[in-house]
Amino acid sequence: GVKSRSKLSREAAALLYGEQIYGSVTRLEQFARCPYAHYLIFGLGLQEREQYAVAAFDYGNIFHGAMEHFSHLLEEEGKDWQDLTEEEVIQLAAACVDYAVTEYKGEMFHQSKRVEFVIRRMKNVLQSAVWGIWRQMKEGSFRKTASERRFTAEDDLETLRIPLEDDRQMILGGQIDRVDTRQSGDERLIKIIDYKSGSNNLSLDKVYHGLQLQLTVYMAAALELEAKQHPGIHTVPAAMLYYQLKQPELGWLPESEQERQERMFKDLRCTGYVNEEPDILEKIDRHIARDGSVVPGSSSAVVPVSVTKSKGTFSQYSSILSTGKFEKLMEHTRTKLKEFGNRIYQGEIAAAPYKMGRECGCDYCGLRGVCGVEDKSLASCVREYPQMKEEEIWEVLYEQD
Image (tube, rainbow, N blue to C red; front, side, top):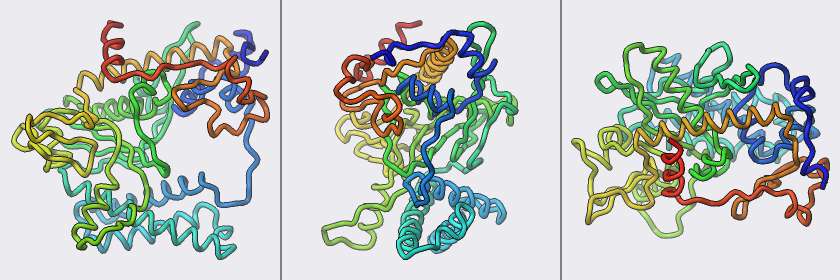
């Protein structure tokens, strides 16, 4: 169709988006999914009609609000996660949901039995999630240094200022849900965690194509922020992780209380990528590494890392990167951001959703009624991204040097 080829002039794009683009990382991920959806939302300012209901989106906001309040309470009491008892963790989590619900929509949330049920369920989920974080922190020696850390143009971070063609620039803002750090000699290890209310895996081919930029951009920002605050130290990426706020599955087999707790704890394991250095792994989870080497046959309940029994090497299911590979991904992400920023100013607004395996830019898009791209016409305008194995991605990234 025509929309799959349409374009704005450079002049029109400059008028529409201004001399500088201020945006969030999710805005650029939206551009990677479909330039037309980006144009409708961020160029024309279309919004979905607001519904008077407790939507899935609200859950995410309320969880984030509750987690932020939880951190404030800890700071007020001058406590670390590790200082809390199990009892305190669970009581605080319930109080934080009440606080966040009242803040978010006030009275609307107490309008019906259904909403009361939803809040009760949220409390259960948040109590499990907070209990899981508490356990994870106890397994290692990192300390929480920031939560809901917002960064804006005022932070003046080099990593978030992207120079574009025609002397324009793009300045990114965002919010890191949690930053944990660990000082080790003159090195400061940085671990970032993004809370998700739905399941989310970090896949390197999506990072490569620019569909998942958030964690790599946030990692670059966190490294720079920490280096600014602690001059003279070297910041090192330790892990970039998603943590799903969920209630663990119920067990079907008979089990002791301790077995139940361990199973629940494993179910709350983070996804994402971790630095492969044994010294760093030990500080994240002391069960998988000791005295500078990994423990054969060990498996982490905190991060996606396990070690084979026979060879004592990382299993194929381990999501690990060297410090060099972390840096390489951050560098590649910056290249993608630059590319997307330039394409926005070049006036790209084609209705050309990406397709990769079974996923497509039209999934969960609320703008189908506007763009008129129906499934049957997808074939003509879709951009096919190949699914790539990790080795292929590294080959391409290192060849680009």
